[in-house]
Length: 310
Image (cartoon, rainbow, N blue to C red; front, side):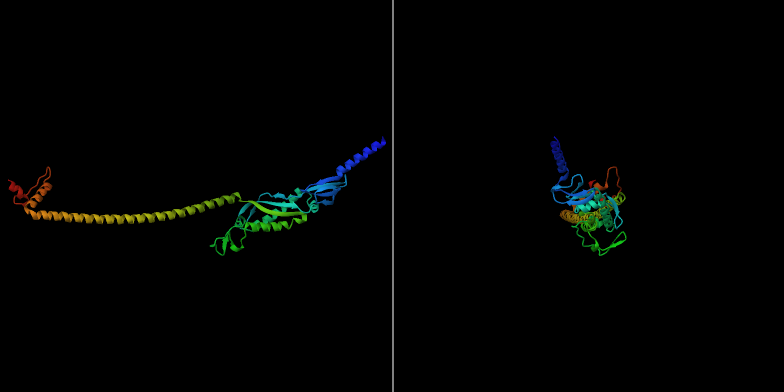
């Protein structure tokens, strides 16, 4: 009986030792073994491992790439434009033992990255112009840019301006220099979003509207100029057409008058007496109107045909 109890006790003890002493680290993990809170070893390879049961503990950390998201910050640029910067980064635990000694947990690492990355981003943004933050690597400078230009009282040379990619490279290098002491490898830093603060955004919108209005006014002015030119050309063409038509009317009228005069002259030459009679009758018709009176002397040539009719 005693022997059976002893065997059961040994089996139970062995089971507890195996259960608490053996542990598995998968491919996405790395571990630190601590004894009474003090690190005594690290496990970098996946598989089955053994630790002292009830004395040692296993602290597991991610081996995969982790993401850091900072809070949006309001930062002034070099040309005094207040903007919101929203930054993100990727990092991983490169030295789990050093990581455990310095920051202990991922939450502690995130807090430390907040201090490092936010500080570097603030310094980088405040030392550059807004145009350098927004233009990409495919930006092509116009050929008519002057050698020097002024922005908010700052004289700038175009060749000294950088793009967003160059700025992010500099931010990554500076921030990466401070992370190895915490067992962290900073892989990448990116700006997710850039936006004006509300006050500046309103002014920018107003400036954009004024610029569009200026362009619209220029188009209207050009249109009015072309309209005036077209109307002037039309008026000149109409005057030319009227002048040509009037000339043709005069020519036709003159030709008709000449033809009529020739006909009258031919008729007069054929029978001068009859022609004189017809002309006198026409004169009577025009001179004597209804309810009208005409007073002439009896010896007037105008009265000769009336006198003969008697």
